[in-house]
Amino acid sequence: MFFSLNEKIVDKFDSIEAFVAVARAGGFSAASRQLGSPVATLSRKVALLEEAIGVRLLARSTRHVALTEQGGTYYEACRRLLDDLRDADEMVAGEYRQPKGELTLTAPVGFGRRHLQPVLHEFLVAYPQIDVSLQLADRVVGLVEEHVDCAVRISAMADSGLVAREVGHIRIVVCASPAYLAAHGTPPHPRQLLQHACISWTTLGPYKAWEFRLAPDENSAPAMVPIRVRLTTTTPDSAVDAACAGLGLVQATSYQVAEAVRAGTLVPVLRAFEAPPTPVSLVYPSKRLTPLKLRAFLDFTAPRLSRRLDELARDL
Image (tube, rainbow, N blue to C red; front, side, top):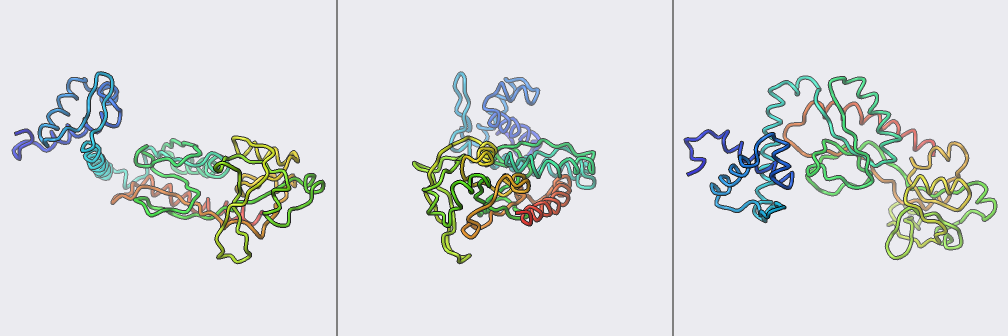
């Protein structure tokens, strides 16, 4: 029988590696290019693995390969196994004694450009043996699925298999230009926003609404308040620019409007009704071994981001 106790365990790891590569790449040809191994060799290894465990792992067609239900479960277990083995190799090779290697990071576009990237420039100078791949994206990136080491998350963290290191908070603020407020007045309550021009950069269901805490009690639950939208854009920077030009009120994160508020081109309003601040965290997969390159990044970045967020809170 394939993979008996008398055979080298490395053979099974080799076949598992082939299976994981094929599943991850979505096909034998792509996995062949990644591993530098012939398609026929990979196909044989996966077939032997399926025969050994008695389960069909991949559904094959002439143009596509997909995981079966059992294959998906087996893939997750094998991927974790290979990740643990890689970590052990790195530990023995010295990565856990000296920070080195490549880090893949992700952050929201605006926050990453304004706050993470300046800190990252300092980090690269301080750690010349660490290379960084930075992915700026306004979406929730799956760290495990997309092989990302660490993410900046601006949200309350749900219970998950991720570790979160909180570095501060940001506020969601409403601003308008002095010219707009002089011409139209300052809304005294969020419910008056239906009588004002608002600039939106996101679609919230069948109609537009912004979130506020309508009672002065800090423990009161936030609620969605409908607004009158005069302009809709696809990016927050575009919406902030329109507010600076006097076209209406905009709701955005404190870091998105900070420069305009400092310059006096925007003025915060409705401060007493702001929704609770949103936590900002450095998030990474929970693992028994944390590579030194990641620990170095966390220890270097966390206090610097905290200081930047503290300064941002004082400015606004």
